[in-house]
Length: 217
Image 1 (tube, rainbow, N blue to C red):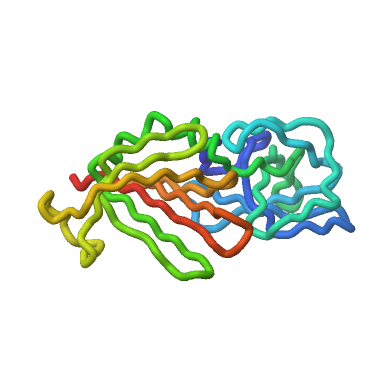
Image 2 (image 1 turned 90 degrees about the vertical axis):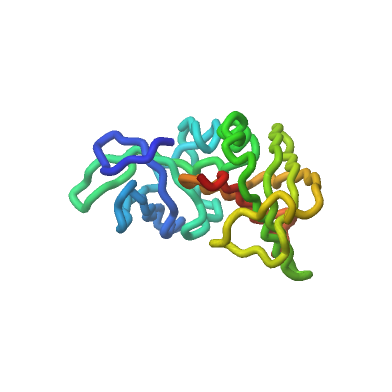
């Protein structure tokens, strides 16, 4: 969905649940406008709730849906809605729970855009109940399919730190290949010169964060 800088009547926007009172049938969704520091609050009512199909980036609002038993998670459950002004600010004329961002969404969005990271840095941060691990490496190739991403890379020196120049070819470590069958639900952050992917491998506390950086100019 496209970022917007201001709310207008009939605009379709996404936001995060601030709270939802199932017994009273209403809640508040916060919307982060592009370029704005503060969030805008939008009032939602139970009877305006709709089912949502499609994907995270192309949601389709459907028939009326009862969310009374849905387990909303504060600042984690994402809502898509169409807004209209009210005497107290903004309210949703229709709304629904947005499908979570999945690996298929990521594939459709980035399958032709990963080449910009070739020659750049890849970082893996892995945290679990067993400890913390990871690596820094130079990206030699990236291959994305609908099931996984395969990385070919060479390790950076162990003492390399951010802010230092890219290591010379002679100082790079061994070449390696890693295939990541990313989890069904994935978070992504696409910035000017990097792409960050975060996913969990199981229901426990283990998670992976994989960050690709474009080569230094």
